[in-house]
Image (cartoon, rainbow, N blue to C red; front, side, top):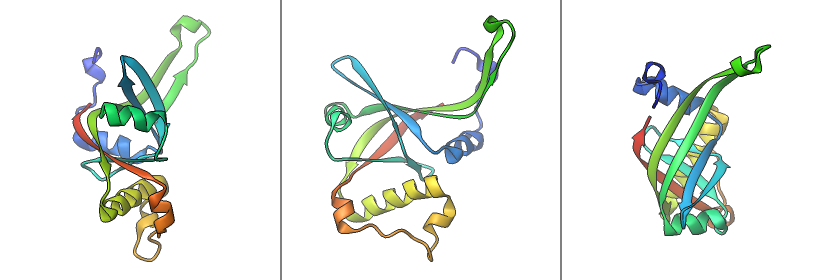
Length: 153
């Protein structure tokens, strides 16, 4: 990071930025050609979880190269100026480098989906009374991905 004076080093602050986010951008690469896609995600404090249709460019790339970079941005504010060259942005962001694993175990897949739902709907979405139910048909139509972070900044 170029501006070390602005770097967020607190693990709790980093987790807070992640917890508030509703989506992330996932970057991957095949044949030296980058590919970036916005995705819903879940974070359990240790791993990131993504879901996808079982086919497509993203899945093809991840099967060949499981390395990803995830970007999350929160609190984006643009400070406009009469002098456009003095326009600036303020934001908090987290960058995650990690490796993808495809989940096949039914329980792991359901736990990952619950994590994603909780990220989107808050803790109320996974209380005992309101826990989502995923039909076998829906489960079978999804690819569930776990990202094991190697570095979070």
